[in-house]
Length: 120
Image (cartoon, rainbow, N blue to C red; front, side, top):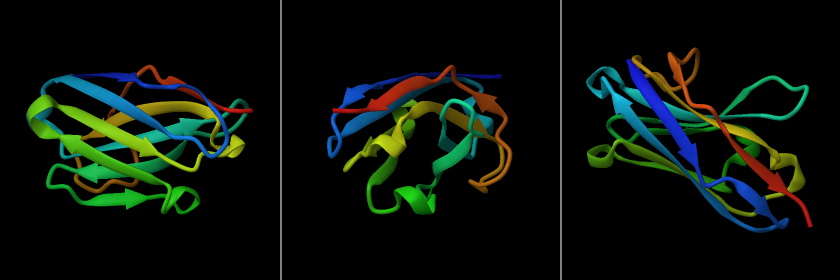
């Protein structure tokens, strides 16, 4: 199985930036796609960005142009660089992994989440 640990969340002012990190361990040979989700209180969890083992990427419309997902396969680490943040980006951000190389749809493994708060 796969274990995921997120870090990098915190408090940032509107217009500011954060970089989230997700370190994966376990049976990573079976993982072909990883993604970042977010969930605000009382709201459904939504996919923010995804990346395949080969480096293909997907971005949800609300964050296009403001976030960049990347990965270091040697370190089993996935990053989410977030820029031009606004209060609507406030949420718990989760790292996820799946065996399928299709970045949308259901994921198989989840981290515990890291809080991102955008406020002045």
